[in-house]
Amino acid sequence: MTQEQSARLLPQKPSRWAKILLNRKVPILLFFLLELAFLVFSYLSLQEHFPSIILWEHLLSVFTFFYLLNCSMDSRSKLSWIIIIALFPIFGTALLYFSLADLGVRRLKKQLEDATVQASDYLSTDPGVADYLSQSDRQLQKLAYFLEHSPAQFPIYRNTEVTYFPLGDDMLPALLEDLKKAERYIFMEYFIIDEGIMWGEILAILEEKVKAGLDVRVMFDGMNEMTTLSYDYIERLHKVGIKAQAFSPVKPILSTYYNYRDHRKITVIDGQVAYTGGVNIADEYVNKRERFGHWKDTALRLDGSAVQTLKALFLTMWTVTGIEDKADMERYLQEKPQQRKSQGFVLPYGNSPLTYHKVAEDVYLHLLNTSTDYVHIMTPYLILDDELVRAMTFAAKRGVDVRIIMPGIPDKQYAFDIATTYFKALLDAGVRIFRYTPGFVHAKVYVSDSQQAVVGTINTDYRSLYQNFEDGVYLYKTLEVLKIEEDFEKTQALSEEVTLESLSKMPMAHRLAGYLFSLIGPLM
Image (cartoon, rainbow, N blue to C red):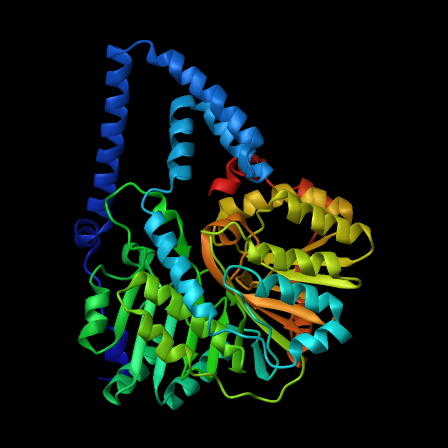
């Protein structure tokens, strides 16, 4: 099959009306509306036949307010819920308890816990690293201890070569070359896969590798079946020999299950080489198609010991999503990558919304709280909880150079409007904010003091920190940290600084939208 044919694994796009009628969204949305209508009808019927229910509604609302005041939820999330319940008492209260019930999630949570425990048996810190850190670097030792004692037990590694790509355009040729060199297996897990040049080039290689007898697996978030791919795309991949699964496919059943999305971007090749970062598999991520001006994204290539953690993250999600048994995971995890001589330390990790350990946010807080010179951040979104606001402002107030680069052309205007509601407090504290003039920043990067950095899939917003499955790679004293800082400086040179004066000139409609959306920002 040629590369162009591979890019058209989907049939050619139908006409607009046929697309609407055949779109899987239509019946699913209709079912959701019918379910909501049934719930509303049931409630109105209860009110009509049992007038005393109104008293119980008020009592439930009072109880709910007390619950929110005393629970461990983030204070901004509490405020959002209180506002919703005050405006829409019955709907808001029902929605809160519906979300807390996590209907349909308990089975997933149990499966994830079991798979995580199984995978952790095959994750271990490189020999001698713990002793070295205890004697030479107590600050890094504390972070390593925290991550190694998290539920998934993420170890710290040496012996890993790291390559930083400042653009998806730079990453793609290297990824294609590594895919061509694969000899045993290829694992790919992505939030978005879309037809086009990028996926066509990758798919052509995957098909050739299947013919050569390799184990090729592709997993994508189930929301793709509602947006970029057809509902039968998994079957289409199966027909060409590729094992494929969708995480949390959307079905016409009301459940909080759909709120948790697989936002990871991982490729593992033969257990030796891995890629991760902000780059999904779609043409805009490598600037083959223009959507919001120039697309600024970043990625990492790992070669060596640290690939073991990314392999474990993939196999954990694959096992939870599919029907593979324990032996399947063990077969791959018992093989360890070859070590590569390298400088510094590498610590890959994952973030799960189904545990109380907010690993992703804690790593970001670590950089902000331990920095002495600077913390430079690139993020497409900025929807902060109180801890991050305090950490950023306190760092700036104690003389740390805190800078943030955000999109000049946002992909979601409402999200950028919410971000601007934090700007004044940050600017007043001394944080500097920039907008990438050529287009859209999709990179998720923190770099500090020319010593430590994080590159991964984790946006600085509630959805990434609280509601998505994510992954990141913490780098310490590797050569690539300096390259990441160099890339930040080059990106800043193409950006326009936000000032209090320019903020005051922001259109009133966007300012108002930002404040209104920020009331429910933590829930979006």
